[in-house]
Length: 314
Image 1: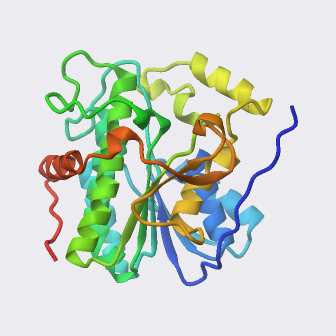
Image 2: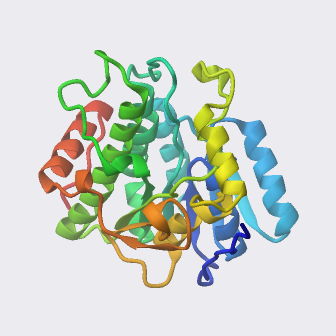
Image 3: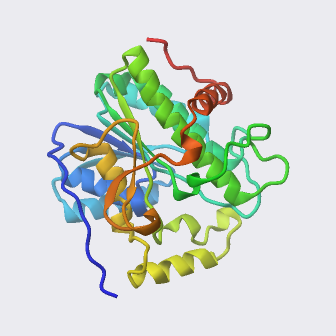
């Protein structure tokens, strides 16, 4: 089946500073490259410097005048998140776009972050919460748009309120879904609190659908020695244009949410094809687990408590 190429137009982003987590490969690299091609100065906080340098080389090969640079960040370490916040604050430049894209998915056995959190909760959600808190003055200075990347896994499930760190009966997929629901609830609550307190930033959500990224690839450091069966199936369907997206198309919802003309705060953007698995990006109804303002306020308070960060009241 022939695949129709999908794309979107972005405005000129010259003079805008963008921070994209998880930008050393996959969807994050695609987001960063497209923002840089549109004129933004792009900061890539990465855990693996070697991968980050390859990513920058690829961006510059396609766009020699791109402005893109690396910073160090390990989202599974709150100390690393704080260090990045301090470093960017020291540079004193407003941030206009923040894309909370980085994530890890379904380690076969329960793993913990450096701070003792279940890995997916810590890296996918809590690390991004702490990052937003540390960068808030720069985000306010830039009247920034914050886009948080969730997942189709957030369509169902809930936060495991009585055991958010999955110390009992670990289920990798449910823990992954929880991390994305938590991040989505936080992103929506960030919009509400910005409106209430006059922070001047806007916040929305995106999800990439399903595409053959590295999330389910072999990751020996996570205890996964080979690609999962799911990734092999996804790769086949994507290559044949069946339902799913590509890595290139999967970056578009976040780009639309973060920088597209007409994108709105407090909304969810994802692929518009059947099942929202692939196709052109579009605004979508919020997933049911993301609709509760009570849950959003609860995850906000829990996240502040776990990360030991606080957001100002004004």
